[in-house]
Amino acid sequence: MNPVIEIGKKQFLVSLVNVSFMLKKTTLPVISIKIETKTRKFSMNSLFFLPITIALGILLGNLYFRGLWMTVLQLPTTENPILLTFGSFFVRMAIAIAGFALVLAIAKEYAIWHLLICVVAFMWVRNRIIHQVQPKVRNDAY
Image (cartoon, rainbow, N blue to C red; front, top):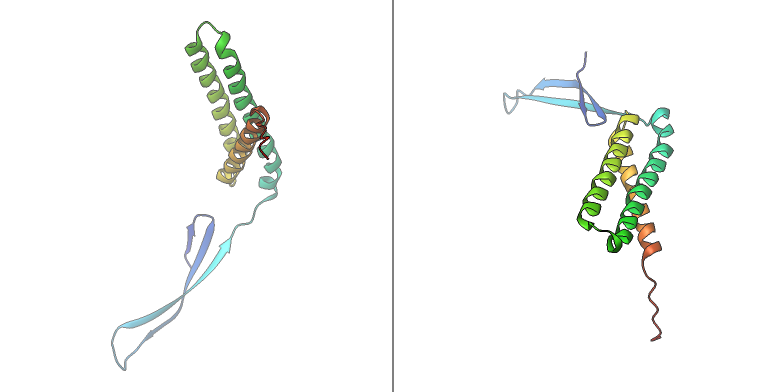
């Protein structure tokens, strides 16, 4: 029975191929080891949850950053801006963390990759919202 070593997502099958003694010049044994790798493939279950992960990242990004923009718009008219700022931050953060935890709970296999894809979709929404609300600058010099 050959030992199997697992490092990350790769499995290494280690087997002794040749054990020989060199008697001519030295008395130390020479051992050669053959290592075969086995890699796991994406399962259908993991690929099924990929669009769900992307959609959840887009939804979380919209909730977080549109909520931030609504908070910024309400700051000049509110009576207690510190309470509004901190309250909005904690509610938005709680929703985002719960959503990312949901992604980790849904994706049993390759959960870290699903989380990374969700964060990329989250940040993509951030860039889109910044592009929408940023004031347009006209440059008539040219």
